[in-house]
Image (cartoon, rainbow, N blue to C red; front, side, top):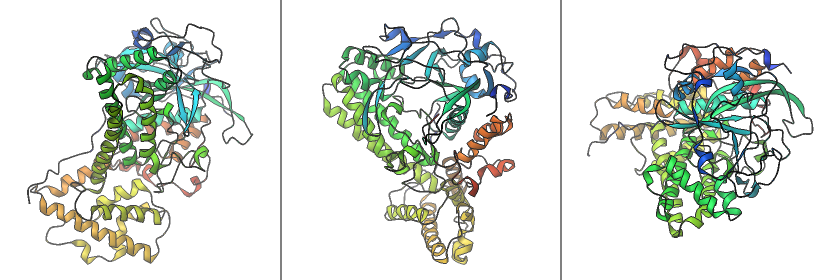
Length: 573
């Protein structure tokens, strides 16, 4: 057999209590090249290039023939810095504030608009749970402006929870601490996992209470308010194009497409019908890779409406997301989705395709050859399947999937994982410890079923029955035989080391389990910032062993199974 290239790896994407009393996370040393936020220069290419709402009154209303509305954040009582992401600050060239209060924190809390900023709320629509919802827009998110970072890239700074906009409808434009902590943590955790995502710079308490009905059960209560500063090259989403097409605002549709291509897809060339088709194809390609990454790490977005889908192929709008702690293709973290399970783990590829089809309809006026749109959708399917197949091979430590019997091997594994409640993260990480690579024979042949499956025992939420243990051991023996075929087919003397490194890079040890996020939320609400600080540190290195933090890699404790915030969540925030 010809030599096989084993040195393939997963590609990492380069891209109540009064909370005013909560201390900020301790600072780390800043690079001398970083600049205070208040001294940064801001640009506003989105505002300059696109038609804005001529109406300036900040009242809920229908907006027409515009891509955005200029609106300033609504000041809060006592903004105070709770958390800061140093890697994002370095990306922007912005230094960590010296104090939990002060001018920079006032900006991040919405109390100060700096020279050069032209804050706005974007106008968009969307399909929510499969139905056209009409105008949506940034109902509580306000983009302050754009910063040109040290790497020469332009990135938006957007405050989520910054107050009412014309798109707020009947809402108050605010966000609560629990949802803000979850977005802050998960944005950075996903980036470290290698999943394309928006980022988060800061978490600021507002010093005000926000009333929310967390369970939608008619029992609203006041909660601590907070604001996240989100960072991305762009927050443009499928819905920005849908709203323009829905109201036949074709000049604005073309201008928005041209702007996005010029700023974010410059390699495609001058905008034209053929360029628009290639652009849609690239959106489909990026979305396919994105969803494959979600599946790889067991992430469930929870609310894949078209207004929550990034035109750049990023994970955006962290709401009722969750991690697949018990492997189940039908699991959804969103209580609103509990009956229909439209956005469950296994449906994510299909929903992404459905959403891209809605985007294709919105872009159809710009593209003469509608067959090109169909081709883009085909590209999505092929990209997802190839990426997911490659990532799954990495997770299993196989050179590739495609040999006779591989489909049966994979389907058999997925069946096993759902027969007994099995933690996805721990199971795949545990596969690294299955004895498959010993020289001179198969060590599994000398083991009984229990001994062979021992490295995986930590992944199970209940003791296996003898029958279940037997089925697992049988699968493991087939798996071991399959790995040894790869070993025989490759010329690499370091086969075992390279294989394990590929598995390690594909299978994180640490993910932001909902119960961990909830512990950080509760601690921060009591004035303890150490829990979120520890999580931030550990989640920056999710593939490393970090033995001193082993407890954070445990499966969900039983007390968290049905606790609010630790299992399913609502969209209330």
